[in-house]
Image (cartoon, rainbow, N blue to C red; front, side, top):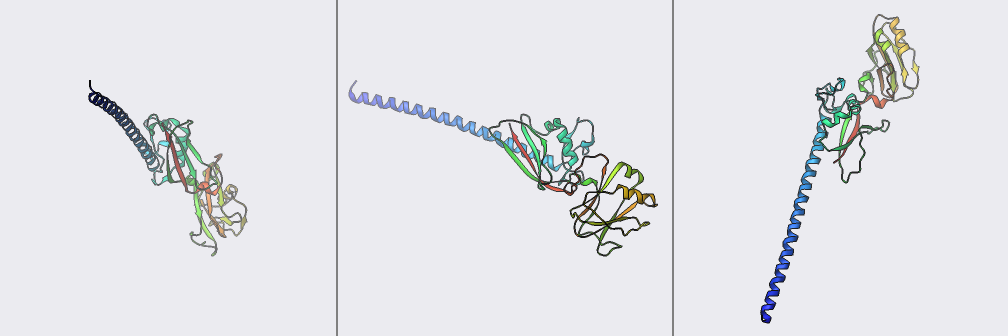
Amino acid sequence: MNEKGLIFSTDILLSIIILTIIIGVSSELLDMHREINNENLQRYYFERSISETTQILINTPGSPSNWETLPSTNNIIPGLSTNENSNILSYDKICKLKATPELCSKILPLQVHANITIYPKDENIPPVNIKSENGTPNEIFTVNRTVQCDFYKKYVILELNSRSNGCYRHRTWKCGHFRVTDEEIERKDYYLLSDNPRIQWIIDTPENMSNEENIGRPPILLNDKIRNLLSSSSTDIIWIHTKDDGKVLIVSEPKGASIPLQMAYFQVQPCDFVVVAWI
């Protein structure tokens, strides 16, 4: 073989080697691209499923809508909004979901781990951990939605504030009324709460009008005063008259209930609803 033929053969061999390397690298890059696309697709569907699950959880009352009152978890799909307003979360449903971990498996995709926590904007109310899991995930996906939560607002039977009507007896005061029966006063505790620690107030009935002004730091238990008024009246209507600035709430809660007697708990509160999920 002459020198030119040898050079030609060597060039062809080098070209084949280079082409083989290029094909091999291209194939590897193509596999990597496919793998990356597959991972991206999996992450897309994972993030989408968590986002949609969160939206359904906070925007629907669940099925049936009174699921939090039922003794069994069979045939239940949990949702956290109140039956009256889809924009407000029910604290009763939140507590039920927290106490019944198996219900979370009905709303989260298989193989998904998650922590679900509600962070009230009011720092007087601590976070509520609905679901908590341990793990060391490589990647997490977080959903954060601003919601409203009713907490213990259902126990409020009267609210007086700057928008309330003026008092029919005291021009510069505000007043309102609520009904109480003898049976209810034995089953419930009635409290006056206010964001003004020096609020002035009067309690009476149309038959037993009073000018006795009370000053005290809320919360103030009203049961004895209400019981005395009921015993000397034929009506079950109780009037509260308040003076000075500040919001006043009259709450009626079951006796023995472990409910913090703070104003914040008896008002609808803005919160962050946070889901941290991983596979």
